[in-house]
Amino acid sequence: MSETETTANGITARYRETETERLLTFDRDGRTAAIAQNIDGYAMLKVRPTADGDELERYYGFDMALDHAAELLAVSPHDLPVPEAAADMGM
Image (cartoon, rainbow, N blue to C red; front, side, top):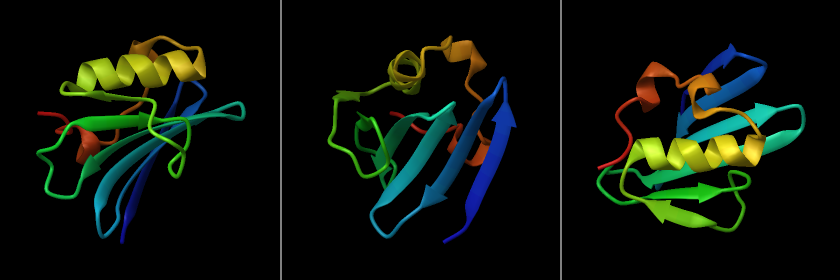
């Protein structure tokens, strides 16, 4: 399982694939957010407060999931760095 990491605007984004999920996590000053999708890449995106946290909401579109993740981090969605491997998440 490889992990891709990128940092911009004081936010660190990490993308990795587990046996069951594609997982994009964000960390900013101790605040976290996570976006998960099934490993096949066709299910709705789940937004969680942490990678292992309880699901807060589901979205079809990546933009909407990023909006929610940005809200959890108290930043603009445009400030979130997205590793290239995660750019195709969503339906």
